[in-house]
Image (cartoon, rainbow, N blue to C red; front, top):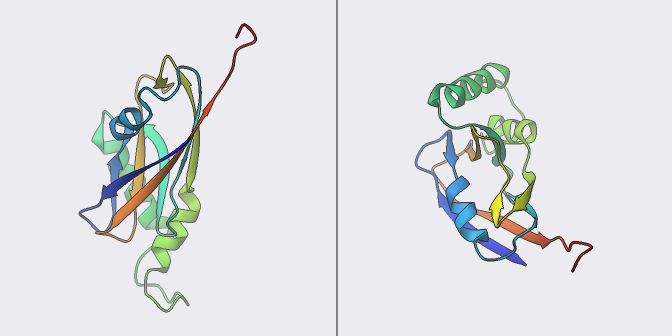
Length: 136
């Protein structure tokens, strides 16, 4: 089963916590299974990290900006080469187990859509795969 969630970014670079949106989207779909989460965008990725101290996200963004700075002589003609590179570094998909109908994330873990070329409207595709137990 595939579901699509839509997210609107507000800034050029931001990490948007989509954990609750995804949990709500999978609610009632399966009790046990896995959820493949995919961003079909070349300038927006997905990651899991701490979501309770906002400085963690700030540190990640600042570090990515140091590794892939704006204003360099990139060859990509659209002018958003850093966004493409950052997305490649972050990645575009996640695979998370589902138990008792919820994503199995650690206590501090949250799922982030990583926007590197906003503001934009983004889609996230969720493929929900049920796991059958040997008892059923």
